[in-house]
Length: 212
Image (cartoon, rainbow, N blue to C red):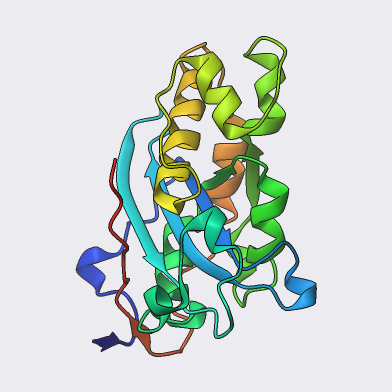
């Protein structure tokens, strides 16, 4: 099924203060400059207080080998009928626009997002890994290690939705300690341009089953 973009009934409204969107990517490798591509993406929308509003995730056909199957568990067969990244760009940017983008080790995810058409929708970012030393005892700063010290259950790492949920819970852990990123929230909302679809025919997400 293809659409010309998100149906208006499913489009998140642009508000003065939209909140956060937590992102996690699974990729074929470490470097888009060397041809590596996204093979799965998850986005979790959150209100400014950390309440989870909506989840969206999809396998992505990278049009090449999926790479380290032993890490992310995504085989070539799993993505063969999945949309290419440009076929879900409207979904991705519509959910990111006007929100503060959050990720664990955000520089990695941004490396892949910034090469996509429409990356100007990413205006404000937070990295739960960089923030961790302000909220957690010393130790390793991987997502699993941070979740363990914060008392957040974390199983089946390296599925994009699972990792995004863990990062979202980590952000909520920080927010419950009385911090606020209001300036970032306001800047993201106020620098959000009027939404325009990317102009490429869009497809529905193709999701993998995740056993929790």
